Image (cartoon, rainbow, N blue to C red; front, side, top):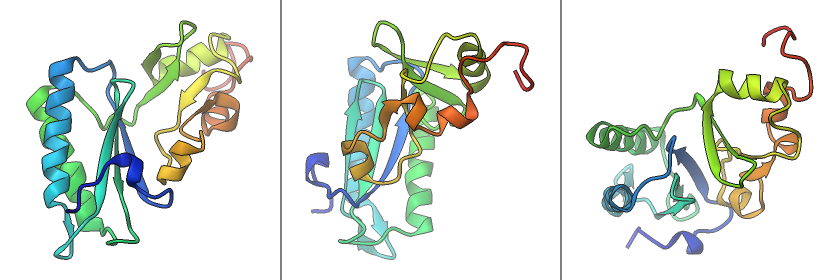
Length: 174
């Protein structure tokens, strides 16, 4: 059986993180997880089953992992994952692959999502700082998630280079 619980996926397994702009309601969560579970059960790379798992976190993030030690994933099998999620997005009218959003924890601790230009303005105006927790959806391994590199302070993520904090709104590129 290629589908395994996410907790049993090894740290060196490949991971892809997909975020929805808002928390999913219970029906949407069920639809997403059912769809992705069905995909993982038949996921293959060059005819061999991919050992994979998924997890939904914070009602907003879908993490999909593949144990490459068991079966390597290929470009075609990764493309199939992204096409499947594209089909789900169209079916639900809910983007999950929007790389233009920045996810972070607001002052109340809740997950927020903003387009990059809006987050840049927030950073320049002091609305977020180096200690603001951001979600680095570019992590590549399950171990990164478990080690705290996915949900991390802005100062330790790529966000610190892309969104300078504590400068004025008149700064170049603002």
